[in-house]
Image (cartoon, rainbow, N blue to C red; front, side, top):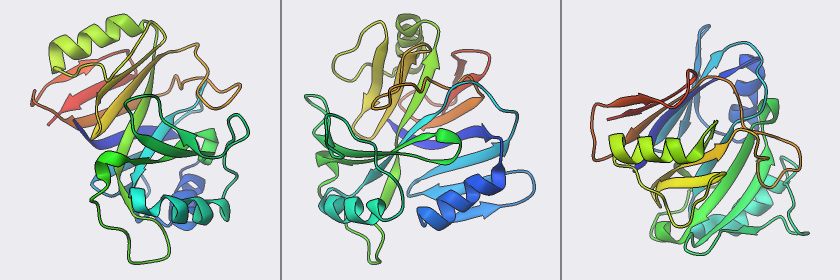
Amino acid sequence: MKILSVTLTVHDLAESVKFYRDILNMPVDENAEHAVVHAGSSRLVLIPGERFDGVHHLALGIVPSEFELAHAWLSARVSILVNDGSEIIIGPPGWNSRSLYFLGPEDIILEFIARDSDAEAKPATGESPRILSISEIGIGVPDVPASVKTLSDKLTIYPFFEHGDAFAPLGDHDGLLIVVRQERIWFPTKTLRPARGSLAVRIESSTANAQIDLTSAISITTA
């Protein structure tokens, strides 16, 4: 499963564009109505909208051989979040990954994740690390098991390793939907909860040309 695009609303489009373009050195196309951030093979579409409760979570896949470069490069630009005294966070069993978490515009929780499955990916030729794609998108829902069943039954997207009533990753190493209960606090923060704002995700999966609405504000579309 690959995440082709993620569309979300931001209160201050100009500030968001400035962060992705000037801090993370990501290519951005913008006009008065929206901006498109190029994240490797994926696209992050930012649309101006009203403020909402909670924050989004987005993970950007990077080349594993560039993890140390990414750590040093990112440290010079943002404050990296710490868990148990470490900025480097090892993924759960089976994930075979290392991550760096940091806050972006409007407190979106961003993550650089290096997966062993991408070991053959070629590194960047410049000073900044190469972003491969949007690797994960966080989705807050009222009922996690019900959402898991809907995604499995209608879009043939299945849980990735262990899952429960409050947290369920669905997909595979190429792309994950991180479905969590709306009241759950986002790791590795102590206070930030999932966004209640608009979120649209377009994915590549075995079930093409389908769309489901997990809530009135959250839609998943397949290509």
